[in-house]
Amino acid sequence: MLVRDAMSKVVLTIGPAHTLRQAATLMSSRRVGAAVVYDPDAGGIGILTERDILDSVGRGQDPDGEHAHAHTTTDVVFATPTWTVEEAARAMAHGGFRHLIVLDRDEPVGVVSVRDIIRCWAPARGNRASPAVSA
Image (cartoon, rainbow, N blue to C red; front, top):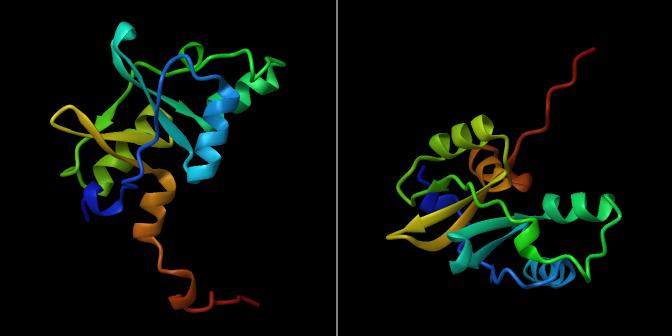
């Protein structure tokens, strides 16, 4: 299976001046765990994840005063739509992250997450057999 078949095509793009609260609100309303941060002054495309926001709040920082640019990962590994989900999983495991921005011709076309990959590999909830119980 390819990344294009597994990825979410909902790409939330925010700017570097968005506050963490604004980013969290947008991420929550779209039910996504990451936002693409487009910042032409800092090299282009980065990613802000729910973990980045959680870490900031956990340090006692004010989500209304903290801006996305201060918490964005800019050293990003990108996937392409033609990667296999195995390649995406390997990149995530190697890099220790849970989201990959999917680029096609240098444009974000999706985000693939660990959850997306698990959905590809695990049977659907209603279609799986009951697990065996050992005595």
